[in-house]
Amino acid sequence: APRIFSGIQPSGGLTLGNYLGALKRFAGYQDTGIETIYCVVDLHAITVWQDPEALRNNTRQIAAAFIASGVDPEKSILFNQSQVSAHAEMAWLFNTVARVGWMYRMTQFKDKAGKNSENSSLGLLAYPSLMAADILTYHATAVPVGEDQKQHLELTRDIAAKFNHDYGTEFFPITEPLIEGTATRVMSLRDGSKKMSKSDPSDASRINLTDDADAIAQKIRKARTDAEPLPATMEGLKDRPEARNLVNIYAALTGEAADDILARFEGQGFGAFKPALADVAVEAMAPITARMNELMADPAEIDRILGKGADRADAIAHPILEQTKEIMGMIRSR
Ligand code: ATP
Ligand code: MG
Image 1 (tube, protein in one colour):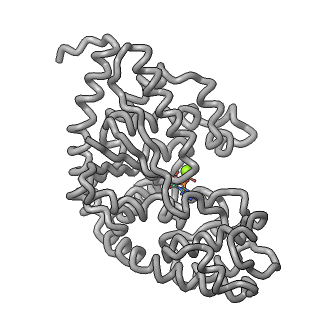
Image 2 (cartoon, protein in one colour):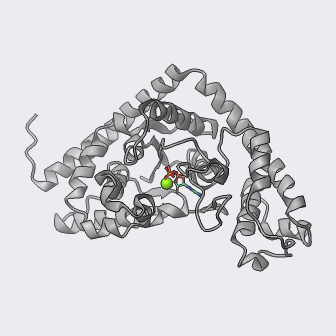
Image 3 (spheres, protein in one colour):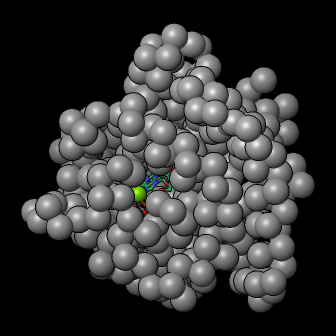
């Protein structure tokens, strides 16, 4: 049966990139007869140091954001990763299947480790192995993510294929990435060559799901652009990444085609476009932010939902982990 798995790291507050590239699409998979498993991946977040109190708060905030964007904890399984120990155990098994060279090639590792990669955590290097474990411990067949996770998903497929080959089995499925929509890669508001990220040190680089209308309008007003007027079609924005990003965000927020938007703004500058974009962003995000804040007022209820989700997740993950150990030749006598 088709089964979807996707995760978000509690490494900060959510951004418009997370919303458009991932969250916004999650609820839609629930009513299609596909089993949906959504996870706040706290074990991934700690590959870069997290303040414990902030980690707790961000975990609840992301759980609230899942629910606020339409994920129903009755229809979907919603939990935090560290409550289901199969993830960490399966990651160790996959650490013996994956090759060191595969990890060093990952662009996310290179970006996050920076120049001093010898001093990054070992977990940051092994991140994709844990991600493969997240997905394959549920035999998930598809993973909805943003463009930035494509390389990691290819590695998940490589790990599944190598495991199947090494142990002469077809136990693990070869998972499909679901990278869909007009905002699979939302860029930073300060730098059109970098993706928008919740862990970017510059708050001005991103729109947070918790920003109020004034903050959103101010960040969009200050977003880096050029001095040229807008062209008639997206073709004219080929070499203008910052401008292209803003038009793509507008399109993703409204569901309107980018060329139709440009047809309205052709010949006008960003002085006209930016306020319109701010209005559209506030209108799309305000209801989600409000619902998130309501949910955040009752942290005990969020924890209860995560605990129940973890029980349901464990019921699927544990038998698959046990079968994996069996295939590898480990004695199971208790
Ligand atoms: P971090 O900076 O800590 O890595 P992040 O903003 O990249 O945080 P993740 O938790 O790593 O967020 O990713 C959660 C989901 O959001 C993934 O599916 C990822 O592909 C998607 N995503 C992240 N950033 C963007 C973006 N700029 N545009 C579209 N999708 C994105
Ligand atoms: Mg990321």
